[in-house]
Length: 336
Ligand SMILES: [Ca+2]
Ligand SMILES: [Ca+2]
Ligand SMILES: [Ca+2]
Ligand SMILES: [Ca+2]
Image 1 (tube, rainbow, N blue to C red):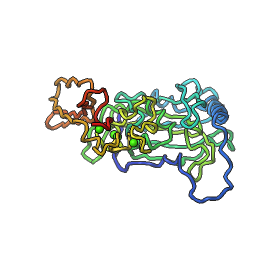
Image 2: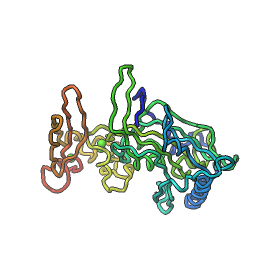
Image 3: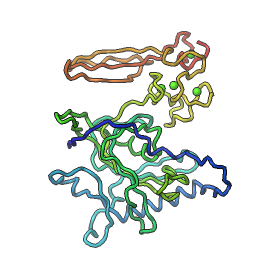
Image 4: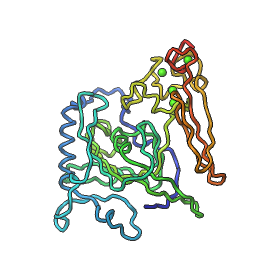
């Protein structure tokens, strides 16, 4: 599957508002609902929707000429009474609430087209087009009108979007690459198309942006074109390696306990020496068809760029040096 697009505009942050709070000091706030109870209620709402709705799977199975590979949902009723419900086509996994770790969700997402490229990690940066709606209970569990979308590919830092979107995108695969067209567009090849049904606790919960009711279940459909290794603060340690306890959350790893998590901290051990100066950078140049370098145990790939003119790939890696051999890499060792 191919798609021609203009690409790479702004870095988007529109999903980010989960932790925002009002800065007036009014005291009329209603306490948020219990997250565990809300997890159960929101799951029931989503399961009701999935059982009573379908998507344009027939178009995906036999794409009409000029099909845009975008997911459309509709109610199973009338002439669509015999359609296969989403509940027969979605995948699911268990996801833990980010605030209350005793609350869990059966989390549903749909893969309409499996991409054939790389799959993002949770702190990476993805390039997507998307469309967001919410479940509108007033109209009997139908989709609201679109509250947010982009038909132009935009880059999203997955540490800055609602958790439910990240949870779906990490299950998907991006394109295998793109070719540049003479008119300035690019054509993505073999990209993934999917949708996600986000319980409010993994969405905006009690603090949605204007226009979305509180505790709304969100539905995003998306095309996943690209993914890049996240290194949010640019200290040359990719963020996936700054999740030291490996719990899939970069917000709770803070070696020097200065309140700034490692993925956002340019001096992770707080010893006054910048992390990027406490690790080593290596660059390998591989000719087309050549063999990839074998990395050392304390070395990770950070960047990979292919130059089609010279037919070479440049691979940049970071080595975590440990000068005093105490098992703690220098950038996390305040003593060295
Ligand atoms: Ca970093
Ligand atoms: Ca820190
Ligand atoms: Ca860092
Ligand atoms: Ca150090």
